[in-house]
Amino acid sequence: MLFPLGVWACSQRVLPVVTQVDAVYLQTYDKAFPDSNRIAKGRELYLRKCGKCHYLYPPSEYPVSEWYEQVGEMATRSHLSAKDSAFIVMYLRAVIALDSLMIDAGDTPAGQGAD
Ligand code: HEC
Image (cartoon, rainbow, N blue to C red; front, top):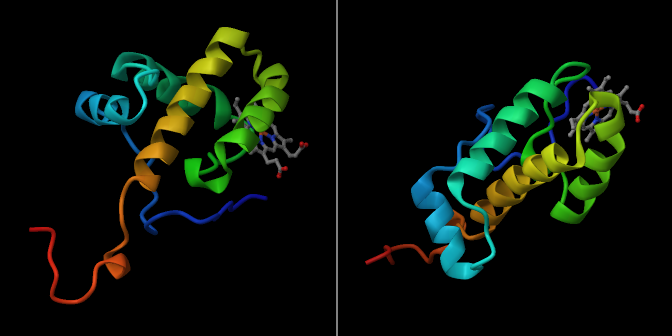
C-alpha cells in the first residue's frame, strides 16, 4: 500500500508530463482528446490532491476504466469537484494512451531500425 509499484513503463519514478506536441499527437488518433492545458491542469490537480494521504499511484497502475472508479471514490476524500476529477482522469488517460502508442524495444526485430 505504501509503495505502489505497478507496471511502470520504466523504473524511473517521474510523473510524466504531457506536452502540447504530445496532445496534438494524441488528437491525430482521437480528435476528442483534450488540449495540453487541460491535461496539465489534471496533472497539477493529481499532484496537489492525490498525494496527501498516500504516495502517488503511477498512471500505468490501472486501466482507464478503473481510474474512473478510483478517482470517483477518492474524490470525496480529496474534496474534489466533478470538474476537477474529470481533469485528473484526462491527465491519467493521456499518459496511458501515449504509453500504449509506443512500441517496446523488444517489438522491433534486431537490425531493423525505425528508418
Ligand atoms: C484523505 C486521504 C486521501 C486522499 C486525499 C486520497 N486518497 Fe487515495 N486512498 C486513501 C486511503 C486511506 C486508501 C486505502 C484504501 C481505502 O481505504 O480505500 C487509498 C487508496 C487509493 C488507491 C488504491 C485503491 C485500492 O483498491 O488499492 C488509489 C488508486 C487511490 N487511493 C487514488 C487516489 C486518487 C486518484 C486521489 C485523488 C483524487 C486520492 N487517492 C486521494 C486516502 C486518500
